[in-house]
Amino acid sequence: MRRDIANKIRELMPHLQQMSSFGPIEAATSSLPPAPAACEVQWPAMFEPQLLACGAESQGALALSRHGRGALVSTPAMGLESFVLQGVAGHGPIVAASWDTQGLLLVTATGALLECAGAVPPAGRWACKPSSGMKLPIASSGKPFVGSVAVSRAAGELRVAVMFPGEESVTIFSRTSTEWLPFGEVRAPSSAAAVAAFSASGSELLLAAADGSVVELQMANGRRAELAAANAGHAGHGWAGACRLPSGELVRLAAATEASSVAKLILG
Image (tube, rainbow, N blue to C red; front, side, top):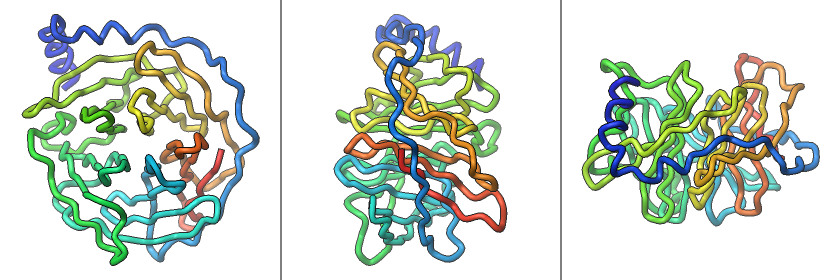
């Protein structure tokens, strides 16, 4: 899979002028925000959130399970509205989500791209349908993808960032009207374990580490800034997602890894 992608990038090199914009990643220069606050959320029964998506215009975040359940969490009050994603079953577990003014955009482990139009419906059932075009080439030999993905359609351009298992670089794909093409590749910081989310503008990419730290990578020049330092004290949890609210505040999801634990949202 990785060899095929590398070959395709070389073939398309004359047409991918923007690839040269991914320069060296510089050290962080921004100051860190105040100490983060852990928020207890009363999740629906049997709901295990594993993904997080912040709205482009809403001071809230969507927490999603891999198999189509979700909850809209308003901040800072931590109010909750649960829903079900219809039409997701049969496309594989969800691996990425982006919430913008058009609705919810999903990528599944089979490479399928699904669109759930509009706002979170009051009836609690959000209709989703597959997008036209080829699947994202992430599934290998029919096996579902187990790495990390971020997706964006800012400025009308569909783009995904993929970190393949065992790799220390992020591959960027851009979709034409019919297929996904490799757009570029950038080396991630050594601490990064996953791509978390694009910014609302699509010009920044959040990279998350297993210790809870988050780095923001500027897509135009490769510069990075540390948004959150390592966050200890959450035994029984694993860092599963991160995104930024329109206010600029960072939200992180600490997913439960033990039966006695409950998922938490971390503000800051």
